[in-house]
Length: 158
Picture (cartoon, rainbow, N blue to C red):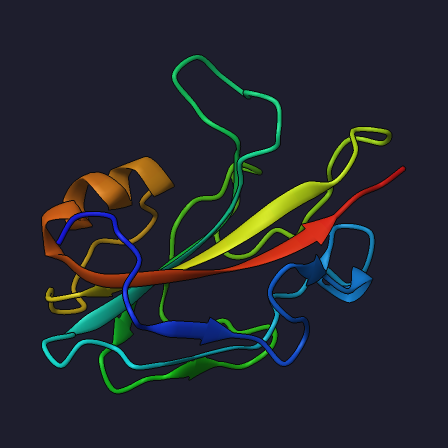
């Protein structure tokens, strides 16, 4: 399938698509992951991966793009939601250098940043190794992506 949007839907009880992410889910607040739910996954789904990425962030290193806030994978096919502040499944390394979720914290005065929460449906068993970066994860799963969609939130520190 490649990286094209599918009919799968991703939502959150914390914010609506295109709206501001509440402060409790940011680096200025409690810095906890928001609740997320999804529907309409392809029938052949064997696992899910979730990414939160800020493409508006300044380049942090050569060859990089934006800022990665969350890499979570090995989510079993029969799961269709994540609770707020989840610590379940396998966490990858974010651009803070940590495992798990690191909330929005754009530079002061840098304007509005957009945070893309990407859900990938994979025809791959949930057995990927721990501590993958976004780019390592994508290089492994790309041939196995059978559905994907996103939820976008905004945040600024002006």
